[in-house]
Image (cartoon, rainbow, N blue to C red):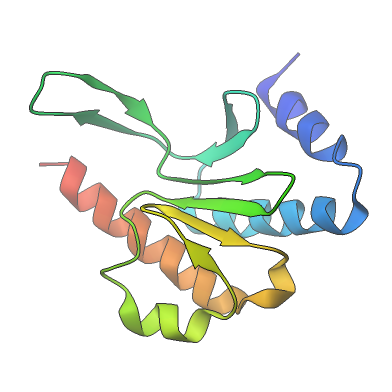
Length: 133
């Protein structure tokens, strides 16, 4: 099965119609901004782009630049640089919760999608600058 068929099959298997539609909305935004095809990272994360990381400990690997996962409780969006550097955008985003680099939303109507698009764009650009050194 091709990678495309895997993520499409994963998203199409979401039983809640609204959640499924929200996932395809996020997919379109992230693919448009990153210009990268979606790829499954594990069983439930749809990621876009990739970067190589290396910690001072010597541990290294590859990870996606941005992504999302349709969790049962909420939609989890992954913005790898976190949110502290974007306070003005976060004020305008809408209804959400955050973790270190996770943005939790219940549905796409709860947030301003143009602000999300800008967050994704800034994060990808800044991450590219940091990892190209």
